[in-house]
Image (tube, rainbow, N blue to C red; front, top):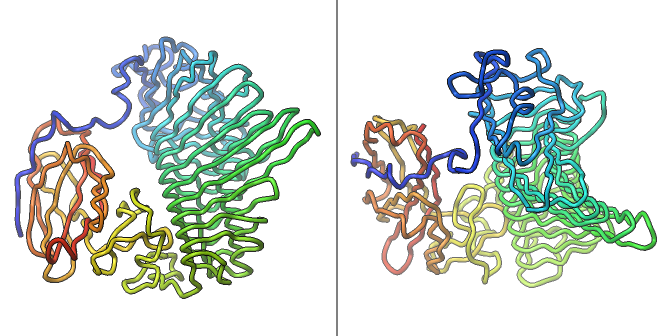
Length: 511
């Protein structure tokens, strides 16, 4: 086994969290050791409740939530209205330990209020929001525009068990002369009435989810628009998401409640898997559905809409029907076969669909059968989306959410300061590999080799060898490395220029 010394990148590593927001004032709350009576909101003397910290916050306070359950028994009074510019965001240590609990009696947990038209960005991160009618909701004030970003937030039992009725876990809302743009990154929506919602009334609104999971919800993601006397639009964009066991995976609906206006709603779903739902994708005559590089299989109904655009996707293996009406498809696998260029109707050869594994097997007819002109991006496993999966020297996108790669890197140990970080590198027999680290990600196409998902300006080659490989690295015992993140990717070849291929990227954090 080869062992290397980890290159000391502490000066260049990216610190996690939001401490880089220099304009904010840090305020701390601690459900276990804090005090609203004697604390001052510092790390050494934190407040006890978010409610109190919010009531005294000024100067763009960033509220840091330390581990604990923040509920009515502690003294929380939900909903808590967090007003910009007094409060710029609320962040926990991690979602597993920092929990905001509405006890099934709260109408909402967090309300976000903007008071100007400067398109200010607001952040919630590393929290669990659970047991309320609604989770994280912007206030529908006129003449405001805001951006709301949720990162690594778990929304659990929002709107489902509440006696107050159903509400969204995370809402993007647009009212006449106002707009909220909402983005969810690496969030989980579990057992919610509606996970992510974009609602436009007399205005237009968009919401996006990247690398999110929607599980056991009544509706995973929803876009709805009503005119309210003027035109309106609502859209949701999902990229790299997993939607499983929901009543409806993605819903789009638009209606005009006054004759003077019109409304439209849309969903743009890419690199995503929709499985085990009652209806995977739903739309009406005033809505649009676009599906790209995705897999819709194992649901009761696939696409339940008057029409949809589909490219490089698998829509088959759903119980009642795969698509109900008209599908405009290219380079896709549908049943029955859809008219269009490059379409097929064949067994996609999933790894183990009975156990929920919809990755492609080696030899699948989906490999290198997607759109031949598509380049760039990555799938949910951080494989470049355009790879040479059959070693014929030509890289082409696969059909479906999974890109089959010939080179794969994974960690075998957890990174620790002063510890040893191990990797496994897999590639076909007789191939050679190199492993690179970088402090930033990238997306650079190298033609038939696929994509480099590391920043070439922040990259260092750290190991090489014959496949398979098991390099390991000594992590320096340097406190400056705590909280640093870096990224790894391998490249393998039998001979150059072909066959050769990049592998997946691995994102790492040193705790």
